[in-house]
Length: 139
Ligand code: MN
Image (tube, rainbow, N blue to C red; front, top):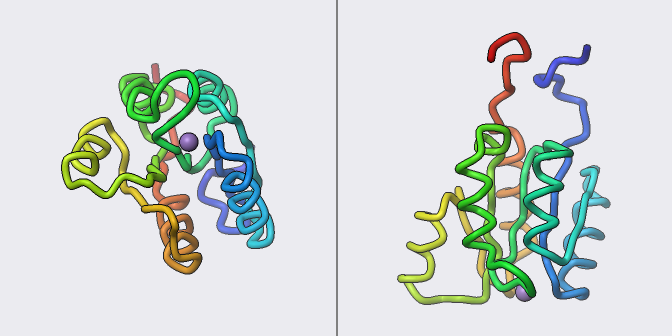
């Protein structure tokens, strides 16, 4: 069984984003840089995909058509199966209160739209390496 620490394994990023143009931008950018992508427009599907696919990182839009990104983050961080997956919130909000709310909901970091491509890539690279490998033997 391959180790989760293999440096050459392509990292998988789950993108939860309902705006088609933003989603395409994320997919094109991250695919070009060698990431495997899983995508959905919906928060509820995002929660399920995170659990099923165990991505290395989640890019999470906050304003979604069904449940909010805040709720998605809260559910993922409350579930043992998904709580170690890093979450970067993607948001158009700029109010300090909203940022605080995102971090309190369990998001590890956030990036504001419109975002700087290099800042996004460096954040993705950093956080996609921080997911703790779950020990297969325990529990
Ligand atoms: Mn949105």
